[in-house]
Image 1 (cartoon, one colour):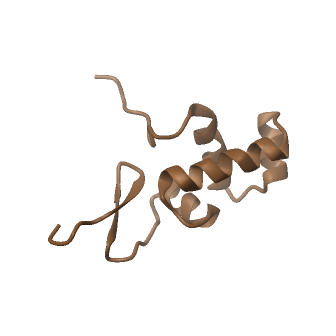
Image 2 (spheres, rainbow, N blue to C red):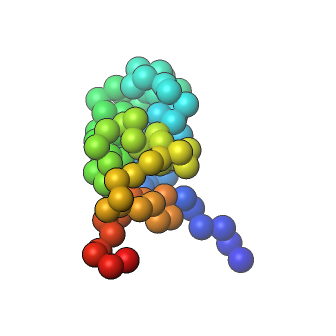
Length: 88
């Protein structure tokens, strides 16, 4: 059976950026490592935050490393943070 990519809601490039965010790298270092502009990195970071439904890059890094702690009304499912319906 083929392995499922983590965070299927992210593009391959966004997953590359997320991996470097989780290592604590700045946008400049990420841009240099992936040979892209800082503005492209910023656009990827913005989409990562939106698609993972987190508030900032630190929370995205915590999700990526599996160390995220969420409010009781959220849970991590397959690398994404999702709201929990009442009664779940």
